[in-house]
Length: 67
Image: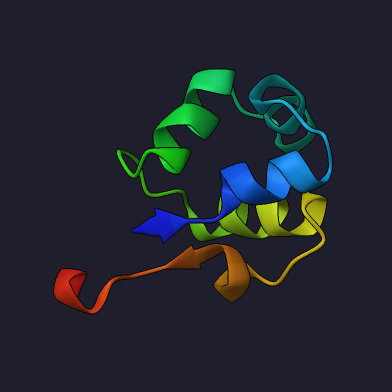
């Protein structure tokens, strides 16, 4: 899965640590999600989307090759 989290964090001047704190996870979790090494739960995905003022499908997406 690919994400736009890093891009959106930059827009709101949020560090990984700050976003992690807001959504209740460790910084490493945000790092792994951004790098595509971890797929978040639906609940966490929605929390991240809310903090980044975006819809979940604007943040997380699959490449056609991944389906």
